[in-house]
Length: 588
Image 1 (cartoon, rainbow, N blue to C red):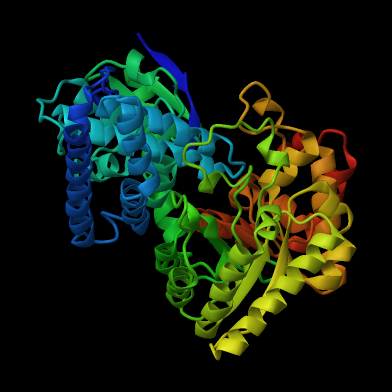
Image 2: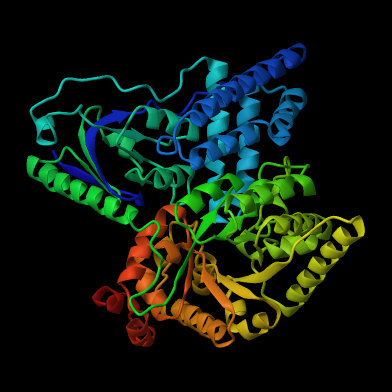
C-alpha cells in the first residue's frame, strides 16, 4: 500500500530506488561498577577503542584524498576532520577517566556519561550549525562503543539483486537503483554511502544545518532528513521515491506515480545541466545590475570549493568551528592565523569575510564537568558579548585575522552587536591588537570592518552602526528569531518562525535602504539569501549582495539573470505594504 512520509528537504532532486535499511545505530551499553584494581584496564579499553576509530578515520581520509572532487567533496573530508578533532579532544577522554577513577564506572558507562555532559553544552549553543555538531559528538562516541563491543560498521555494501517487472519501469539497461534509509548518518557512513552508489537517502533525525544535510547539498544528492519514523516504517527492498525538493518520501508507489516521478527526475537532471552552464556567467540582472553571490563556509578547506563553484568571495566564514571541542586549550594565535590564511589563499584574491567567534552561554566551550543550565542561552553571554568578556582571547583572534589579511582581502565581521558601547569597545580592541602586532614587528594587513544585524535593536539604530562600520551583514536567521520571540530549536513554536512577517521585512528593507543611501555595503548571509523563493523580493528591496551555501549559488544566479531589479522595486514595496506578504509573494 502506498504511503508518504514528510521531513525536511535538504538537497534537491528526485531519487527512485529500492530501500536499503541501515542497521540500527544504537549500541546497548552495560552499566556496572568495577573494582579499583580494574581502573587501569578499563582506561586501556577506552584508549584502544578510541585509537581504533582514529585509525579507521585516518584510512578513510586517505581514501577521500585519492578520490576525485565529484566522488568526495571537500565537505566530506572536513567532516572527517571534525570527528578526528572530537576523538582527540582531551575534555572527552579526561572526563571519561574521571568517571572511571572517581566513580568506578565501567568504560562504556563512563563514556556515555561524559557524552551527556558535553552534549548539554551543545544544546545551549544558539548558533544552529554549532548546535547540530552534537550529532557528530554522539556518532564519535557510538563508533568507540562499537569497537569496544566488536560490532561492525552499520553501513554495509548493498547486495546485488535480480530485477523485477517493476524495475523495468525505470531502465532495463542499468542496475536497480538503491536508496538508503537510516536513523542517522555519520560523515564516515556518508563516505561509505557514496562508495556504495546509493541514489539518495532518508534519515529519521537531522536539521537543515546537520552534517548530513551539509554533505548532501555539497554532493547534490536528493535527501530528506527529520522524517522521524522512516527507518521503522520502510521495509527492506520497498520501492521508495525521495523528493528532495518537497521533503516528501513516497513508499511503495504505484506504477503511475513511479512514471510521474521518473519524468520529474529526468527534468531535474536536465535542469542541473543547464545550471552548470551558468558557473562562469556574471550575475547581472536584465536591467544591468551586477549582483554579488558569496559563499558561507565553516572550515578553511571549504574555500577552494567555493571558488571553483563560482562564488565571488566568502561572505561568512564561521570562525567558531576552530573553537569547538577545545575545553581548556582554545586555539592560539598561530593556529588561527594558519587557518585564516588557508581560507584567504583558497579564494585566490577574492574577499573573505571572517566572523569573530560566535559561541555563548557562559563559555560552553570551556566547561567539561560543570552542569549548570541556562534558561535562555540565546539572550545570554554569547557572540561579541562573550568575546568582550574575555579580551585576551578576543585580541588573540583579532591578531590572527589581521595577520591573515596580508595574504588577500579580508573583511572582519562582528556578530550580535546591539549597543554603542559594545561598538566602541570592539573598535578599541581592534586598534589594540594592531598595536600589539606593530610592537612585535609582525606584518598585518588592512581590513574592512563590518557588523552583523541580528537583533532588532541593531536594525532600528542602523545609522549609528554606519558611523563606525564599512559594511553590514544581515543575519536573517537570528533577526527573525529575535523579532518574533521564537526559539528556532523549540519544535512547539517553530511553525511561527516566519521570514515574511511584516515586521521582519520592514527591518530588512530599512536596513538595506539606509546602507544604500549612505553608500555602504550590505549583504544577507542567513537562509533567506540561498532560498530562491526570496531572491526576487530581496532584489526588489535593493539587496545586491547575497551569501549562501556554495551549492545554492547557481540556482540563485539563475533567478538573478531572469530578474529586472528596477521593476521588482515597485512590487517589493507592495509586499511591504500588505498584511499578508506570503500571499502576494506567491502571486508575484
